[in-house]
Image (cartoon, rainbow over all chains, first blue to last red; front, side, top):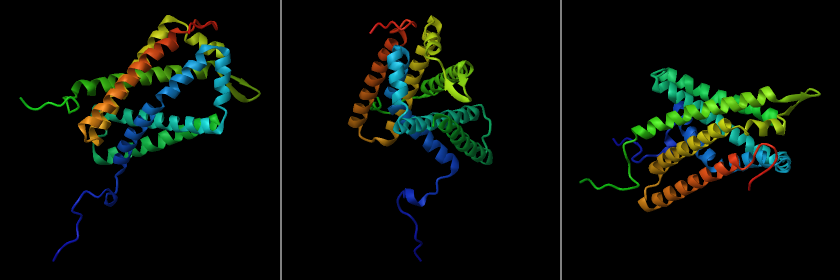
Length: 124
Length: 131
């Protein structure tokens, strides 16, 4: 009798575990932050240069699209930092077993989402 | 001699360490700046107005703040380089495409480094600019 089993690596058949999700999002958020670097530098530049550029910046940041972008950036930063702190703790041999790793991944996901929500409410 | 490829893997213990050193530096800096902004923000008629522009500019006018900020941004760029390199190594199989992406990322990050010096030292904290 022939058993039906996947003969190739089919991503859709894999249920990604929570720590895997956190790891994947760590990469995605890091890449997003890298791509947004010029925006961050432009914001720093305009905020420091003159009062006119500062005023222009605050006006630009009032558009809903800018706010949405800032919230995405905030989430990326929060997730990246939280997942990074989890990494550092694990490097110190803290929370290495599976159940602890799952719990800390859930913490990373919820703390970063919570902080983003908090920042989002304040921004909007 | 084993065939070595410039875009291939290398022993990453130094990268591993630098990724963590830069991470701690960046988090410390961000916490400091966020604390400064929160402590120096003012509230008007129960709404959060935020930081005064003069105060923000003042923060970035001292030598040490400029130096620490430069250290922060250099850490960001170094950290970003290691991260981007790791991602590209995992998902881009063609050595040629990898090389192109590496060169682009390095050139971009070096340009950002020059730019950030201009940003940090291009004003004198009083509204005069040296652009």
